[in-house]
Amino acid sequence: MGLKRTDEFRQDAVRIALTSGLTRKQVADDLGVGMSTLNKWITTHRDTDVVSKEDLSLAQENDRLRRENRILKEERDILKKATQFFANQKP
Image 1 (cartoon, rainbow, N blue to C red):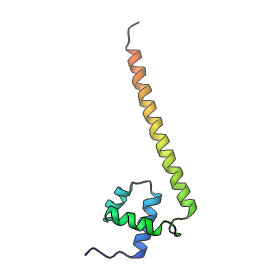
Image 2: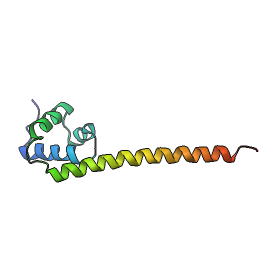
Image 3: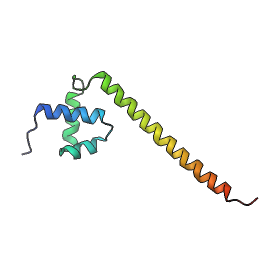
Image 4: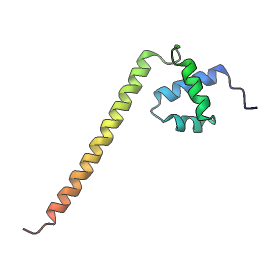
């Protein structure tokens, strides 16, 4: 039988999973729980006041900004390579 976790631990795990920007797999591994267990806790506590609306909206905004930042870095790297390619071309 697995370890019994306190309700406070479960709520903290849900809060971390929904607001940290980490994947659920990373959170589960860091906390030493299984993915299915973490997902069950998230389903159970999602509609409670474990995570405030403000924290959740900030986490969603952070996710959006991370995606945008990743795309911009990829575009920048492509432009750097194109610049190097064209700079090495002989006229």
